[in-house]
Length: 148
Image (cartoon, rainbow, N blue to C red; front, side):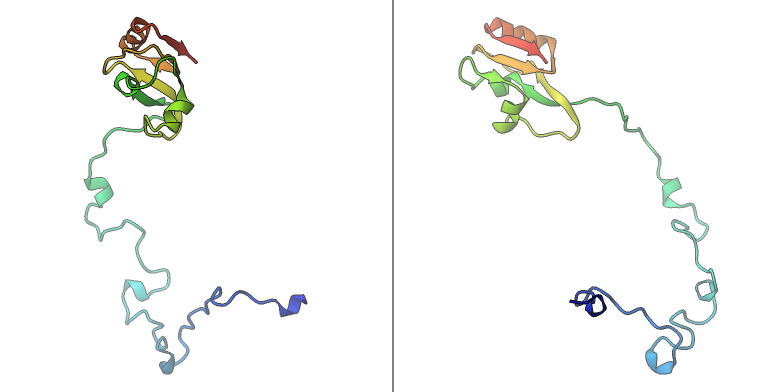
């Protein structure tokens, strides 16, 4: 193999459109730009988003809210999701994801346990955050709530 014999893959390189090369080419004379007007001129055309002078949609539609870059997002699990688990189970982020107890959240800060539902089995729950009612319910069921 020599460097002079190398060529691009079939279909990888497309020939450029040859403008202004005679009537038979289909793009001769005006080079596909039509006759006169803004679009036929050198440097002609309008900037992106320009709507002919009417108020652009980006300015017509009201802006609302913002997304904080420092917002903390947690994977949320309720006590009702943990109620069916066997006694003395260790529940942490990995366990929740593996068993599909909650949906994955992008850029999350860990697991948060909320107190919706009843818990009657003793569990060891390891999470980044607990609601006050969830912590009380876990401890009332003789389980432990560990903040990690």
